[in-house]
Image 1: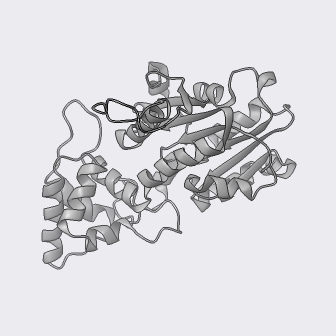
Image 2: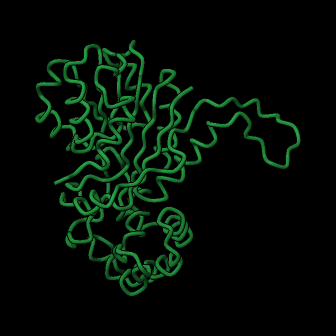
Length: 320
């Protein structure tokens, strides 16, 4: 069962407070619908509030179909519009909807995978050893993890494993993969990759993560172009938000959190010139006010209830 992370905190920032009578009229966006946990909380909180609408997106058609059944009543009433799409295409998606002329008040990004996606035979889970090395969140993506492992050269493999996975043994892993291929081996299922990784990688000292976590993360991010989509999604969110609207993000590793932090910092400054430049020449004007000087994290009680939340970091910024 999937459990939403920091549900109360994210909802309060998303809608601008815990008093539903003060929720401003307009459109609110759940950019990563998943199992609909955050959307459900939003709809419960704003059930009787007039002229408040929710648009929820997900690139995974399975999540959308499941959501259409669960939220049939809200969809029929027009309170919720559930759309298959990537949040990097926010302006185009919103401009095609019947609520397109209403101001966008808040956008929530929860970048984590749904718990249910780890049991759908797509290669996300280490436990599904016979699952194909697919790792696509959407059937629209053409590249699979198997193609990367079977076709990419050493430098390209090293680069993504080191940069996207932050795995220091990236070079050794890439070489081991190519050595297996040179023997005529083809990477088809999860266990094929695990057999290579368990001979090279070790569980980081003092951490509870699986020895293959970082390499799997790198492959998944590459297959789904996650970093590129994230950065573009943040830019699009800022463009379409009404003044006073909020961007709420929940990240689960540094590859997600770092781009958010950098984006918020950049857009909260009037000058982004290099420090060595004596006179400002960028003409940049700040567009965001950061509401979380340090990222919020789950408390001990939530981590006990939902261990998957332990690495989550929430950041919030408001458009000026």
